[in-house]
Image (cartoon, rainbow, N blue to C red):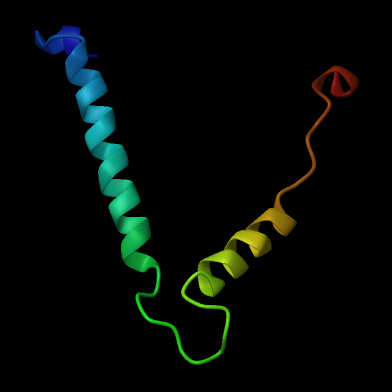
Length: 67
């Protein structure tokens, strides 16, 4: 919608890039910077979270069969 405000079309792209950077910075800010002596290194916490999220993703819906 940048044209409605007299802006260049690239203004929307720049805005989306900035929004993405803010979102990624927030996500990185939520990850723990230090881990305890539980083993697995620094990647153990985020890796466990990713595995947990992957297990909760629903199966793909066959839109053709649904219709």
